[in-house]
Length: 227
Length: 233
Image (cartoon, rainbow over all chains, first blue to last red):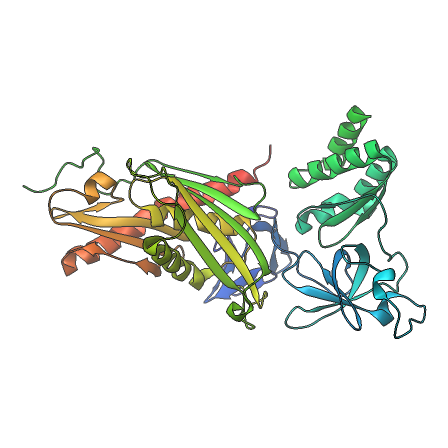
């Protein structure tokens, strides 16, 4: 006899019992003890078939291979750059992954990317100790010049982008800004000073109200009121 | 004469009026406020982030670091020197030990989760209010936890086992014992148990049984506060 104790899309807290009996399976952010499944995190319950998952409502960024992120260069080493990724761990960008051009041994790396520059990069490897390798040799990856970089909670990134990028395209259109969203919660906005400010306000609004429905309409009204 | 009527007129198993709120410090990754009578605790959680000094790092899992501090004006009229002292160092340590069993930082090797607790106003039971606040703040910060921790102080005042002592009861002119207890919610495992004063074994067992019900009340409030933060408009 198995029964589920929570509803789809309800908010659960750590340690809450999600289901009893062996018919259900523990998915992400849950664990089984004896015949019960418990939540491990504060988040939204998601039941798909027999699997119960919890989508976190907040929390740290966990680096994944293939994620496009925005990083800040903190150091230059013999073989490349070290960058900060809004996690507890350092990331390395090797010279061979930074540009397709041949770089001579004696060349000054700070002429290519200087310390405290922001870069749009992709994660190509994550070790068991969460050390990160980056690449910049993919389309759309480059060093950031101008504009501003703002930080939001990384769990809100899917809401900022929206379904088929509807949200982000709407903000781009209304404010006339160029916007790049990194999976780690860093967002680069470039445009006119007013446009940048409005885009930043809109992103902060999304972050604040991310658990509500009908957000695209709310943000659209918000941006129209500003313009 | 036995202690039949409590100093502030509560029933023997009644807790002081409680209040809780989540997300009170916008700059922190997670934060919470917990009030128990006249004891107020604010907790802020930062991280997981890089841990320095490096020799404290654990390559197998992340570690937590509690910092407990009473504000200079928080006591009963005496100014408390800011910064650490032996008492706050010990309480920080027991808080670490009370929280560690439920926190799962295996996905964050070498990292640290910093926990800061400040008490702007104190009237006994500070470590209990602090632990209850921290449990909420950790959940708010999205730290993986196996269970919630709820904490409350039990005690015996002149032969009667009571829940959640205030300062007047702790300093009652008779034999008094003060037993801060922290428990997990599902399994009712004890993660903090300390004692001041003296108590007989049967009375201690009675106090521990009462603590299960008392921590359950704290848990209900913690849960309510966490859900309220994300409630629909």
